[in-house]
Structure formats: C-alpha cells, structure tokens
Length: 336
Image (cartoon, rainbow, N blue to C red; front, side, top):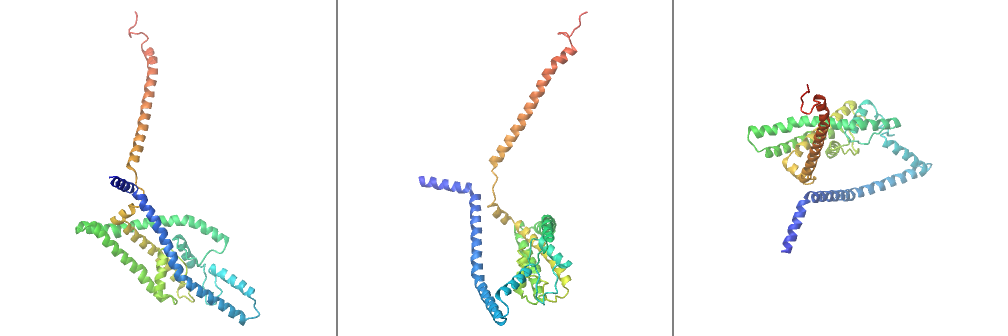
C-alpha cells in the first residue's frame, strides 16, 4: 500500500516536472557529446601533431648545421616575423607573392565571410582603422544579414515546401505528415547533391592540391558557417580567372547558406520534430495565466467602479447647487 502510494507520487512528480527533467538530460547529453568530441579529436590528431613537431625540429637542426653563420636566435626572430605576417594573410614565399589579399574581389569575399559569420581567418584587417571598421560593419551587417536571410528563406519556403506539400495533400489525398517527411528527405538529398557533392567535384578539379574529400570538407565547413580556414579556394599560385573565381565562390556561399536554412526550416516544420522540441521547452502554467487574467480583470473592474463612484459623488455635489439655481422654492411654485 505504502509502496504503491510512493510509486504513484514519484510518477506524478516526474510527470509534473517532465520538461525540467528532459532539459536536464539535454544539458547532460550535450556536455557528454562535447567530451566525446574532445576525446576523439585528441586521440586522432595528437599523434600527427607530435610527428609534425619532430619533423620541424629536425629541419631546424639541419638548417642550423648547414648555415653555421646563422645563430638560432636570429633564425627564430626571422621565423617569428614570418609566422606573424602569415597570420595576417601575407606570405614571403615566391609562389604566393602574386596574390593580393585586399583587392576588390578578395575584399568582397572577406565581407561575405564576415556577414555570414563564416570567418575563415586567412585574411584579417592589418590596420587599426580596418579593425575598427570591421567591428562597426559587423555590428550593423550581421543583424542585417539575419533579417535578409530570414525574409528570403520565408519566401522560398512557401514556394518550395509548403505549397508542394499542400498540393499533394489536397490534390492526391495523401497524408500531410507522410508527404512532409518524404518532401523533407527529398529536398535534403537534392540540396546535398547540388551544394556539396557537385561543388566538391568542381573544387577538386579547380584546386590543384585538393582531393574530393578535402573539397567536400571545405563545402561542409563553409555552409555550416564553421569556417576553420585551413582550406580556402582561390589562394593557389597563378590561379586562372581569380577575380571571377572569387565572385563565384561568394555567390556559392550565399546561395548555399540560403539552401541550408531552407532545408533546416523544412525539417523543423515536421510534426514529429515539433513534438520532440516541445519536450525541452518550458510549458506555460494555465492556472498562473488564469490568475493573471483574473487579477487584471479585477483591477480593471475596480478602477471602473472607483471612476463611477467618483462621478456619482461629483453629481451629488453639483445637484443642490443646480436645484437652488433652477428652483429657489421648495415646492417649485412662486408666491404672488
């Protein structure tokens, strides 16, 4: 008896705070996913980093042995300056000195990466004025970009998602949920093909040092706005039609980002995903809402009563004055 009562009370407690429990498990799952990613990346990449460090030490030692007139301190000062310039997108290599980072097409590409929050990091402002303008430009431009993308995605979603689903539902009588799922999967497949696989094949041909995996990696990192900057197109030596190539990449990034947002919006409108998301949201308490409404109505009603009472008092105060002015005699008749 007591066990059944305790069990039922626990069940009621869990059901009452179901959203909080789900949110707690969501936070815990996210933290575990972060730790899982850190463990995998560390275990995969740390050996390669160690090999690269050993190789660089050997090259440095060999270079100092072959050039005894150069001290290690002088070499480190030179390398430090070279690496500092490389962080700003400037290279001293002879096969990279022909590409300017701040011509119009490169600046246009940089502006698109800033506004889309991709930020490859291969090119950064050099001057204090450029850094200050970048801050102001981003503060205004990023919300402007979000407004622009929201408006475009809303219009595209109406024609690409909602109308086709409604057409098949009304015209052919298919279930709306089934049609929405099939349409979302189809749209996702088309988007991945047009903005990932096909561009990856094109980049693997146009970029000499990229294979298909590296090209696909660039497409995903770019359209997901991660923008690591380890692969940036159009930066090779003697790139043909570099200006036109940079403009084409800028258009690809904007259109690809719109396509990704349309796909995400399409999946978010699925009934199953809506139910799943609501598990982690804070549910509105109907009783509290009713209490607020009643209190608001009571305040409004009391204020109306006070106003009416005040008007009556004013009338009572004015009535004798009016009566005496109209009829100075009690019975209203005049003495002759």
